[in-house]
Image (tube, one colour):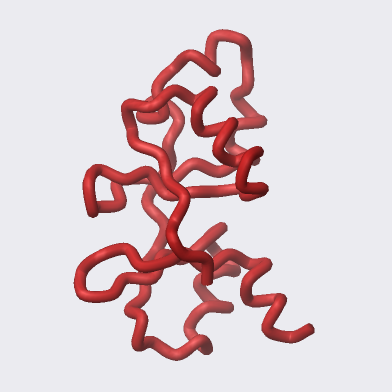
Length: 111
């Protein structure tokens, strides 16, 4: 699990989202509105739509559905099934986003 969670807001530019992905070497991140996850941004989705005009667009115009979430008390065993269908899983503790788990995080458990 990665914490603190690197995220963008729906009003940020796509350019800002790409810069954060590059700076933190991540391929996806949640879109947050305060403490609530409202969507997601994934590099593969951005690459499919990338154009000079897209980088100045807002994240809200390119964001996908929110990542699924699990409780911090849930077993690690629930993650592989979720990650087969989704790029990441958000970990929630006391109603707040506490971390994010990627496919690479789970694979690291086996090395």
